[in-house]
Image (cartoon, rainbow, N blue to C red; front, side, top):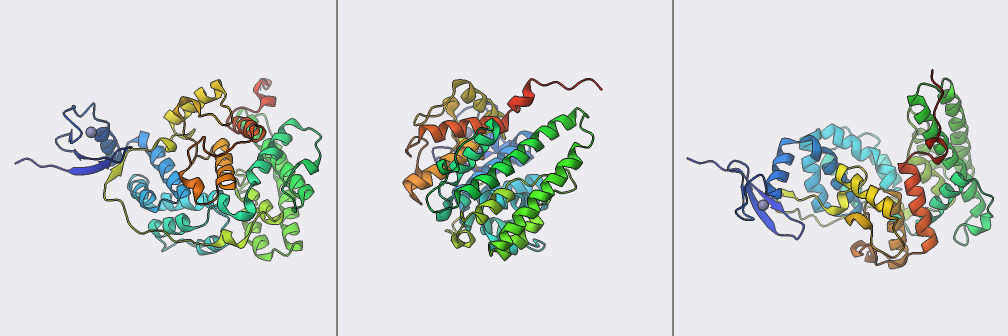
Length: 381
Ligand SMILES: [Zn+2]
């Protein structure tokens, strides 16, 4: 008697195929199992193959951003099978300030014991995304600009920055200071690998803690006691080894008024789940965090993309954490509105060439070696 284990797998075009994991056959046609991409994908997922580990997490993260609960739930299921629930919960916690500015969510997750990964996913998918907050529109342009300036150390007038009505000088000062510290830290981490740094980390930790106390103090003075209390816990370095990544940006945004209470909303979502066991990895899940995506990024860098044109290398960065993608989302929401931006293709929103070029440069900067240290070799020790 033959046994079969059938898994339903959705392809990029929406068609669903039946993969039999025992006979290694797929309903897509007579191809042998080694040639059928559906079979290989479902097999690798089922076996928790090393190669799919990051791809699953990358896809989960993208669907959270897209607000597609059904797809996110499917990836979450695979992620829990492959990584275990507590690691997946930890991952969701780690991206809270990357994806949201939701203080209510932060409160809810103060302790996640007893809260399932599915519940946490529900919380996060239904939460307003950072780039959807009306007060926050345009932020990424300014953030990129401050990074760009921190790299080049130019003298520019604060009047060049910021939408009307906000405190441009405060914004500029805080972000410039923050990015200078981030860049110092990036260099320190690199030098540390050569074992040449000695007291560098200690000195940096002191500078960071001064920056954090100033920021918390400013939040308190500005009448933001809830944020001050939350960020007082989020911003300090953990054991002098880990610099918080997205929380400082969130704190500065709150301080300079790039935040409103819609950041605390949960919008709810349609509850229907997909009626398949797996979906093929979407193209937009391929970014620098996956091997195939990194190869495409390298090609994209070589060919230097232009504003308004498609990306080289079949890249789709609309939902990625690459800064160019982050800027694209902010720009799309700003120019096409919400929810119009959600179905936009890469070339749909109008793009300002200057903003675009700065986003490309800043993106390269964070992904690659610091231009100031690239040619620098430490003396032998
Ligand atoms: Zn197939």
